[in-house]
Image (cartoon, rainbow, N blue to C red; front, side, top):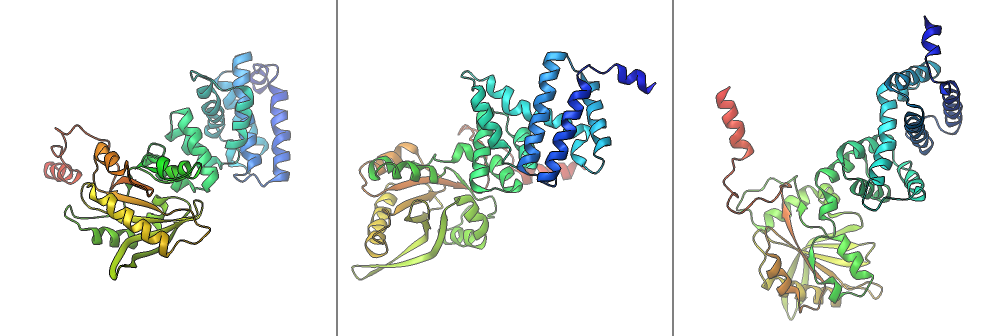
Length: 358
């Protein structure tokens, strides 16, 4: 009976299986089949091989299932060749190739090859997250590049995807194009986000700026993660003396890539035009009193609970110092029409209703 089942396999199956066995043995020599570059490259090639044979020779589900069993039999100590994972290898290759080729301007074969080098630098678990959590192929590539650039763990990658970082990065309203030379202006724009999501905070609706500041510093590690790579914390309530008067900066950072100080002013209400004038004053003082000769001009970031885009644009239009304005939130929510805002039940209200009906 076993011979009869074997005779039903495609003619090229035996050679394909042997090729994989040889590649696995070679990968075992170079790495211990951990989530390494060699292993991910192997998964990529297996997925590619399956797809090519399905298209050219009509391989069906039974053949792929048999392939997984034969690989497990040959390499019993390796869990990566389960039936589920072999199908994932196929999905892995398709996710990075078929989706991109279906774009209005599909990528070339050379770009696919370059992409394969990118994704093989990312651990297998990260790739699975990207495949399952990010449907848009261009966005998936964006997160892959960021993962490689910043060395995100899988948990951080998931958090960044869930917070829709690709929509927030570089979205703050700024006057950088007018106030900073290129390419410093472009780099500074990409450093800022809008909105900033401080989902680790539990603040009352009437919280004051000092309580917001304290909450951020109580969770400094998570606050720094949300700020992004390159930010170095300098201090809170940093003292400046100007004209015999005392002034205090809410938060002061130094950005290692931009090579400049970043002054953050926290607001628990809506943006007001006069905030830009005060920040302009702070930046002038920091540049005079703290900036070193090798530093670039200091940057200001006004973090407000709400803002009106046109008001912000008018307020920043003729300001000489580089200032950005962004909102902060305690959780990321999609914007609702104003007529619905405040009329939907909260999570707590829904839980109480459900509990009452239990």
